[in-house]
Length: 75
Image 1 (cartoon, rainbow, N blue to C red):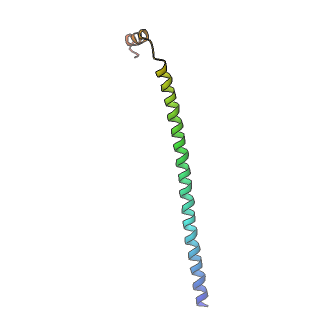
Image 2: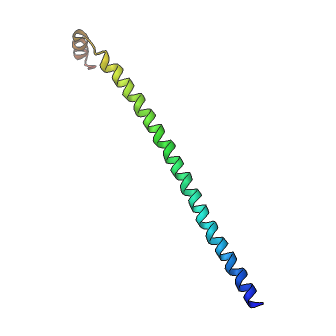
Image 3: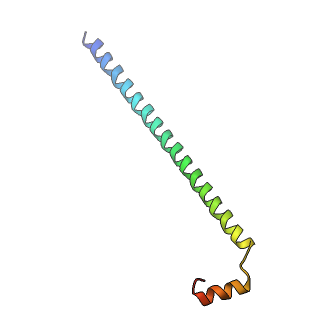
């Protein structure tokens, strides 16, 4: 009977270790997915900011407008 309880305890230990590693892998998978989504959001915002800057660069203010801004102090 002692061998049977020893084998049962060993099987429970093995099952607990396997569950631990499985849970750990699932947690890491979730973290990686979260980082991926965050990186995609950052890339999207950077692209939008770049597009906005490009629109400004494509249409620079005229010299008269620049001089007016300098006189007003809002350049």
